Image (tube, rainbow, N blue to C red; front, side, top):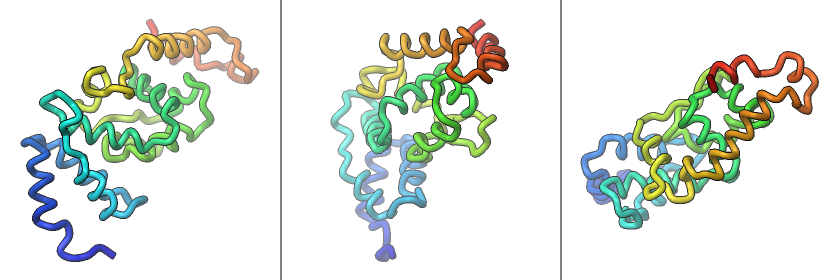
Length: 190
């Protein structure tokens, strides 16, 4: 039950001003508000309260939008690990779960709040993609992404350990030791 007219002309004008001419800002907001798991009025209200001045960048409003969306994800540590793999390697859901030792379906569950910025496939053999390259740029720039920066030394070391474990044949699961995911991992690393 959304009151009419909705959104108000004032709300639309404020969003247009915040977009600073960036089409990706407008499309991301539409996808964010249109998420079927939330009330659209509450989502719009959260976006309207962002002022874009928190970041010193020409992309300030967009960066703040990305940050707000990422803050909604409850499992932040797992999210950052997954985002590192997505940004640098573009693996399938299944390969991300194998590399990071997550249970089948975990990547989809963790990323389900990010439909406005990521295209999360239903097939485990498919790759996660960003709706716009600016999201990857955001994640790779520490001044823009802050706590969501994916190229920090600790994160890269964590990812390297995951690769080494994948190549070691010392998995807890004997089936992985026999069949392993060494094939796909070696082809990516080399």
